[in-house]
Image 1 (cartoon, one colour):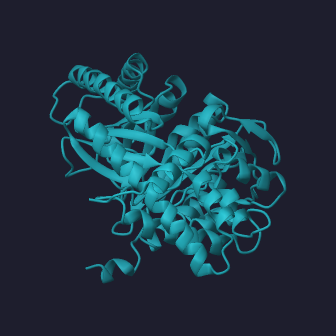
Image 2 (cartoon, helix red, strand yellow):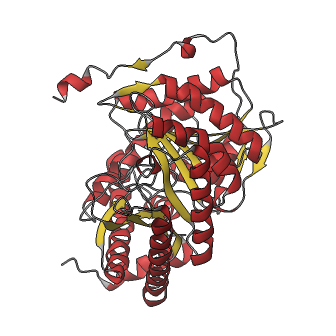
Image 3 (cartoon, one colour):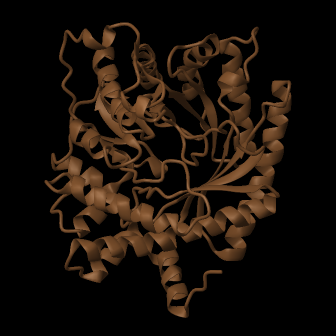
Length: 446
């Protein structure tokens, strides 16, 4: 058993009360594939949603652990469909799930998604056709389409089609709807973060996966430590990561115990928010980088990710999800300031994802052509396929916007600066038909 000194306990109390340490999400992952009718699924979600809210409330009240959101993740809806179901039926299901979530106080339901790694099957097609309607008519439903993996390669046909879905959703929702939609590769089945959260294959009937937070804690530790070497810097972050992750492990166990289900994975990723003092960009600047986006930023991020993983992995019995570092442009106040200063562009962000885990996340852009949008998505996801990384894209095309405009997305989604994108034509490359084969790494993997 790990024991903590009184000084360490006091330090954690300070983290909770003054440095924005919290549990970003408690996600109950549920298998509903054994239920025959969608009415049964709705009733099942309502029953478990009430239990989850009670369990989370009890943990918050008893232990004083701030839990920001409570979520439910379902198997990809692609596998809930029957032959006679249509896209319109999926929209009706999403509306019912949305109604239940709001009724019982669940912040999000994930799993409205499909895996189309090599080709789009009939059920995947129905899901894709329903996405923009679902996102424009619901508040709590989150969607994803996984378009490839290191094992399978990359489905460029699907990416080209999804660019149209993203633009259509943006038109219907003034750009906001795409905050609930992810295009991904290598997506794990235990992600607690939306929009990628879903109940993966081979998992228990129910389990609790937890997402931690705490950029403010890491920043404060670095500023106080006055380190003189990279090794000291790495060690400082590693020690803090252990404490943050330990809180995630504790929360997963406590909520799971109250639900009589399995504690699942803890996602070690740092997730920033728009709150002052809760920014990944500020951590980079605390390391000595003048402004996020300045030369040296990628190396600073790499040090942070490595230390987070080494410290966090010692603190939890099972880590999962993305377990890296999120750099969502609109959800990080420091990144927004850097974008306003012209220090961030779309391909700097893509470069940073070579060491970070989320991909192009919450990035407002002007309306561009379908070809340009698809090409950016392909560029980003190719990194994930080549490097065996879970990566995603949440681009937010904003109608009638121009680079430099500030868009208010509300709540935890924050404010974002519209990033310039070169919309050059003709761009015929991404219109070539078919599927990009897996990399040679696939042969090395066996």
